[in-house]
Amino acid sequence: MSKKPLILGIESSCDETAASLITENEQGIPIILSNIISSQVDIHKEFGGVVPELAARAHLEKIDWIVQKALNDSGRKIDEIDAVASTAGPGLIVCLSVGLSFGKAFASSLNIPFIAVNHLEGHALSPKLNSELNYPYLLLLISGGHSQFLNVNGLSDYKRLGTTIDDALGEAFDKTAKLLGIEFPGGPQIEILAKKGDPKKYNLPKPIFNKGGCNLSFAGLKTAILKIANNIKTDQEKFDLAASFQKTIEEILYKKTQIAFSEFEKQNNPKEKVFVVAGGVAANKKIRSMLIKLCKENNYQSIFPSIELCGDNAAMIALVGLEKFKIKQFNDLNYPAKPRWPLDEKAAFLKGAGIKF
Image (cartoon, rainbow, N blue to C red):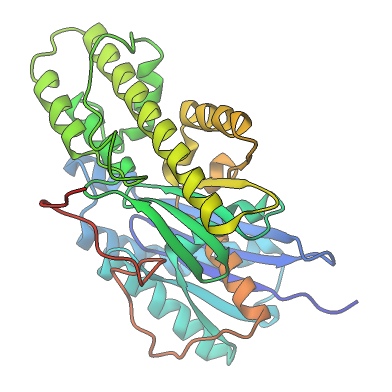
């Protein structure tokens, strides 16, 4: 029986300090040996959002302990590690630099390969940690910083089909929560409040709903929420607005995903139609349920990461590291942090005022 690779993953792109060790079994299925995440919510909530300098300082204070705990929990020894994979981007550069520098130093001290990982690729492959997943597949990546449909043809092989032209979906959830007086990070609370409200109470806009292919826009919706929130006087009105927002998002994603299905099928003519949803917003149970229903209607297999692996974590970073280790795709120790690092680097930049369809 040959020795299976043991990969240390490190994640520090925003406000979670995380480390994980993973390997694989004889069938090549990934096995998570440890997955440690330290959240900074208590540090940032009084500011209503992530403060980069405070986040970086917290990473510096905790990363050594987090990596040591991941190693202890894995039951493995430090000299058994075959490679170190660290998030190199995208993200906040002061935060990225902490995990990236630590990972490089760790790899150098053990004289083992270092692998720079795109954080978004971690999300893209994360369902492989709990499901069998073959290429090609259609990916909807929805998180606090990104919202896009991608044709995934293989490791590091992505073609963007659609993207947000302004705010990311997770950002829209968090800002709506803030307008409703919900403490940061409030996005996940929207779904809870929505259960108490009337989703038909407010008729909210759906920007570029009938144009723009499977591109997305949420800025106009956020502006509408602001105007209504300023006049809310009761808790029930707050619940109704949360429910109306949740329903509007579901309707936008339902239609735009149907368009993405068509684009994906044109490009691939796949034997198996697989739709993967990943990123923090993939933990929203109402969105999950709606997209699973849509997949059944269109003969797609729907695959999601487990709830605990939807948010930022190091297991997904270690997984990309494992995939790259097996094909000997390593990086130099001078590899830079990349605050902007799209999965499809050939795709046109589509963000900001003035985008027309």
